[in-house]
Image 1 (cartoon, rainbow, N blue to C red):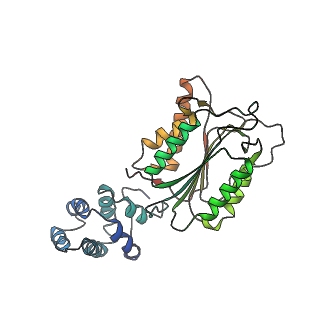
Image 2 (cartoon, rainbow, N blue to C red):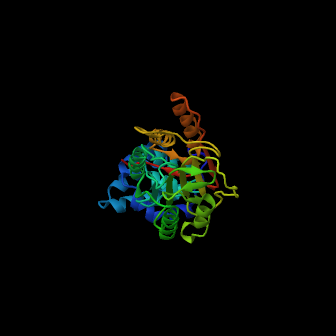
Image 3 (cartoon, rainbow, N blue to C red):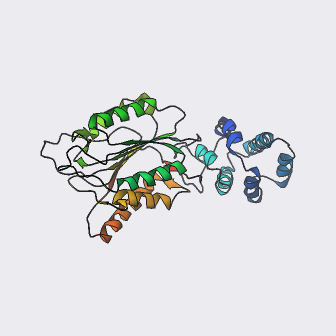
Length: 321
């Protein structure tokens, strides 16, 4: 389905979102500025709507008029919603291809950042990762997420944090986001105690959580995937409705600047910032890969980011600041 044309919204579907429509169409004049010239509504409709004194009554009257024009004028409706920046209703009606983001607070960002490690000779201090935390926090607040930061955690503490966050996710949260930033080996994240938390363990936590079922889950793994002397058992992310972005590929390193932060996070933030009005997670993965390559070329390093996705629809984030 194309976001510009090809929509077919039934009267039944439009009636199902009536409460949300009245709640979220908060700039009715702007909507009418696009709906009337397009032919979705007439000037007589506009006059009748604006004669209502109560804003909610205006929106209810608007809903009633549009209802009668569906499904034939679906494209005109979607165009007016988009142009007047009523994105919550746009996404609700487009939810065949987009996960709905209908709550004011879309969910939580579990942000785990390990900076210091017990064995400093083996795992050096991850200087610059503080910049990563600052950038992620600012961006995802603009995307209407609640940021839950956690610093310097052992492997077991990381497991517990992820388990608790998965179990605490509520129906009022549209999306689950997690950043895992530490040292790493192939298929594992390193805790401050030097012990490993495997991807497969994290996957099991997500898979076993009924609270996360059918909910889009975005995971960003900002670690090296260094070779390990241990035998690598199959360790993976395979739960449904999941999009995982890795800073690097197996048996490779992820680079970081002590002053600017990690090249992967720098790249991700640049790409998402440049698309804040419509951050399409899946389609922007290619741009993140390209930006990582560009950042690496500037410092003569070689790093390839990658992603794995089991999403059934698109995840669209929009900044409101």
